[in-house]
Length: 483
Image (cartoon, rainbow, N blue to C red; front, side, top):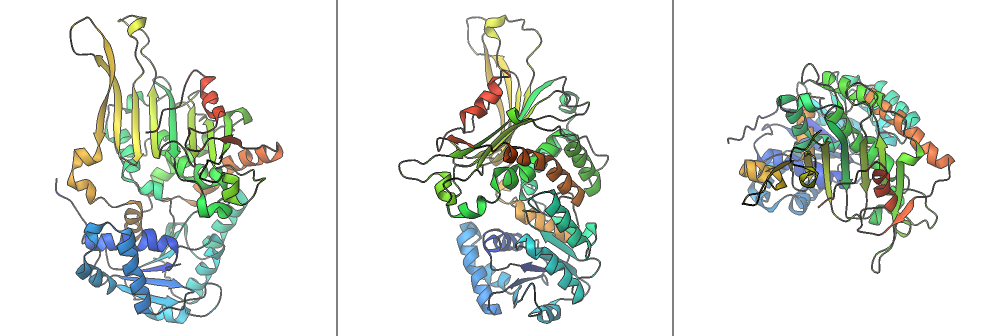
């Protein structure tokens, strides 16, 4: 298979918060990988902008260190790194003041794509947008990229949308969710809409239920105090899991283009039913002999913020009527993994007798760590002795199926940043989509506040609170084991 790397057009990319953790870990090493792959134009420029009193050479040295720390060793070629650093510039800037803006304006070129990455706190989004316009740095073709969290509830999300809309058109705003940049997430759309095999079965007649899981083995650690202000519902369910739910449940768009795809996702969110209290489980991990509990990590012995959430959702439309969608995410669980499992109904009649009835077919889309797909089917067990049935997986690991091509697949941030340069908003959230997600999430959060709900404790490195398993057990189902 021949890799098709298509260079993007010439651009100036400004990274506000260019000395921050996200820039060092993801954005700058990702841009270097795109340069290494030959996707970056010769004249393209990347300008770091932050409050740090640093010059160009100091910033370039920081970028070099970030590449050696966070990029794979096979990309650590000193000659190529030196060439990449020739594209790097820096300006010290005050997001809420006047300092540095004229210097930034002087660095921007005419007649190239201008993109501005807001890798800063949401409280600075409006200030940056205002100054980009007031200093004449952004034209009507400029693009801005904003990171989550995009608000902490519907009211703040609306205000952020209003702040950005005062200076930029919706077609210029790219709300980034790195989950949508994952190769397997995009393959989900290819599997659904590129194969006639699945679409006739993709409905309540044939599907029993769907599970969406994002499990982590790490705790909140040094982020405890920050994390305690958001929790798993705001940090993961409202955005990442919601986006996965939309992609698995949406109707086929008439075209694979930004607004057509996002229109269908929005319909899913608006069709979500309210979730009753008995269909939500929240939890906090306990301490181990060697590690602190969630409350100790958060620095609050009375914290009621959840680091685990499991819930049962339903979509009120013809395709999904009565089909449960089980969502769960948590910290310090037994294994790390993200997957979507589509569990089909059992055959209506077993011609082999009840003693040979096997598990239903399950289509599993693995997002991490081993990206790929598995379809569980029932076959005859080889050998003599009658018709003995056994369940086997038809397994497609990207690494095995595509070989070396997988190693050159861009990670989520790389892909999404290149889409910004191309002007492709398909994998970015629209303002009304964000607000609709908060409109569904807010009542759930408000409900447990009013009930004085306390998260259930669970053993670290387990499957979460027992109540999570019981929620499915009541309906004669069980969670898939994450391995």
